[in-house]
Amino acid sequence: MLPWWKERVFYQIYPRSFKDSNGDGIGDLKGIISKLDYLKELGIGAVWLCPIYDSPNADMGYDIRDYEKIMSEFGDMDDFDILLEEMHKRDIKLIMDLVVNHSSDEHRWFIESRKSKDNPYRDYYIWADGKNDKEPNNWSSFFTPSAWSYCKETGQWYLHLFAEKQPGLNWENPNLREEIYAMINRWFDKGVDGFRMDVITLISKNTELPDGKGEGYVFSPEYFALQPKMHEYLRELRNKCFRGRDCMCVGEATFANETNANTLVGDGNELDLIFQFDLMDIDGGSSKWDLREFDLLKFKSTIEKWQKTLDWNTLFWGNHDQPRVVSRFGSTESEELRNRSAKCLAIAMYLLRGTPFIYQGEELGMTNYLFENVGQLRDIESINLLKQNDRNKDWAWKGIKAKGRDNARTPMQWNNSNNAGFTNGNPWIEVNPNYVLINAEDEEKDSNSILNFYKKIIKLRNSNDVLINGEFNLLWPDHKQLFAYERIYENKKYTIICNISNKNTNLPEKISGNVVLSNFDVLEEFIPFGAAVYVNDD
Image 1 (cartoon, rainbow, N blue to C red):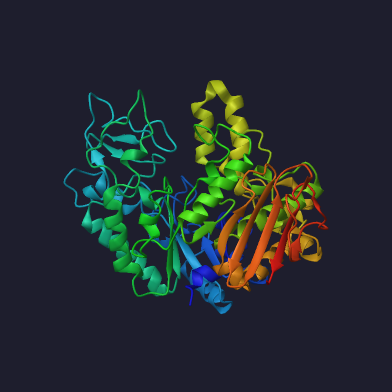
Image 2 (cartoon, rainbow, N blue to C red):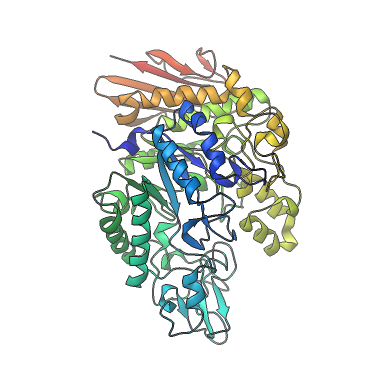
């Protein structure tokens, strides 16, 4: 019998943008509760819920002030208890998003830690003396030029791999680890079904804090990602929290690759699943902001590599940190192409071997927002990019419009009423004006909609041993337009063919079997973003 997380389709909810119940312009827990039937009808069996803990929102909830209190904008613990109960009534599992690589600088641990060098909480964080009146080393962070900030109270620097208000937790300290494990277990005791572990591969750092190779500030993951002690910590976490529970943990495995990924999931003693990001880097250069054209051959080799590397993958096109998939990898040149490319991409990804993770609004074909000025932005990463590239703003804006995280964070488009039915108030971030054409209510009524197509894909996947258990074989790896593969189990085979291009093409060979799902009238020629699923029982 397979574990439940292999047999269900996950749906990621970004609470701030999902559904507002009280008119303050911010999505909340009661709003999520009101839409659980929508998720059930879609075929969702589990929800990954982005952070809902108390936070000052320097990084939209990924800077946690109190791990056991609900963010006031989202509701309170009574609301959470009702949400969990209502989800379980519908046989929907709940996966919490947990950030334990760092906390907020407003967490009580850090408030104490910065008071003095001999404070009992001092070693809950990573502090170091400077060198020559500068930082302890030359590391840069994901968000800022320097990964260090100075604390005048004690004359030392603290490490933050993200924003200044996100000081890094010191996993070398066993007291800190025990506090984290106890907190996790209290959430488990409430009934949650698992955790998505944010940047979990960064929890161990090289304690010698060596300089990165290069001049100026240097991004140096070789010293803070996938360090040897990380495995020790993950195994301890497994034994103290996850062992013996019917739960799951999926890790955001930043910097994981095909040579080290199985050290995280191979023996079942650390994580169950990982998110690796080779596909998310496929259209970037030296950074994600260096835009590159989509390369189908590279995409196919990446998919094949990971299908062969891991026995079980996470399947996703996007998340709260990525732009909208149809704008990124599909086509928005016309309504017809948006509709067909969204369906094509769904077939391409979610019938692979692994667990699907659908990001909110993806099932509607929601698109990127055309941001025009900094006042429209809410994401600290994009805002910092503009600040750091004052002389190159055109380049920065081009990157933000294509890849900025706010693209995925505009409100969910529920209907064609004011503010897309997301809120009766003033939304915390602007609603995409195309909600008049793209919204759940209209798509539910349209048998040809992206939403109803997603329901068909999920139903097909959920009810099919071949598409869950079958092996993966890539077809025609050198074809410049077609992404095609087989799923084979026992005596049954499914063949999935997707024309991920804007030109017509013929199949290299005839495919036997019956078409069970397609987004166009299948003939010998596949139209742009045409996709079909064939079944063969021979």
